[in-house]
Image 1 (tube, one colour):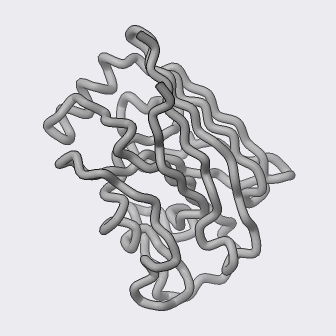
Image 2 (cartoon, rainbow, N blue to C red):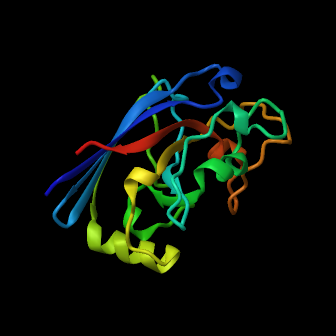
Length: 186
C-alpha cells in the first residue's frame, strides 16, 4: 500500500526577516522508495536552503516552533530554541538524504524570485538502516515529524543572541525560515 504524507510549510521569523516563505512538502512511501518533493516560494533569492525533518528519537510527537519559542526574546526563533517542541534534526533533504549527512553544501538554491523545487527518490532500506544506526529505530514515523527550511543571505544583520552554529556553518545557514507539521494523508 502506498503511504502519503504532506506538510503545509509556513513562515517562521518572517516578520523580522521581511519575507514570508511558504510551500509544501510531499512524502510518498511506495514499495522500497521514499519520494520527497518540496516546493517553496518567497524564500531569500539565490540562497542555499537547508531542509530537514526534525523529531524526537523517543517517538514523541514533534510540533512546529512558533514565536512562543523565542525564549531569549531577541525577536528570532533560532535553531536551539526549536528543540523543546520539535526535537532534533534527523533527515536532511539534500542530494543524499539516506546518508543523513546534515552539514553539506548540496541543498537546494532558490532562484532570483525565491522559488525552488526539490524532488528526490530515496532508497527506503538505506535510509531506514542509517536512521536505525543513528536513532536506534528504523521507523521514520513521518506523522510525528516536522519539516524545517533554513537559510538567509549572509548580509542580513542578526543579533549575537541568534545561535545555531553547526560545525563551520553560522546562524545565516541554520536560522529557520519556515516550518510545517508532517501529516499522514491516507
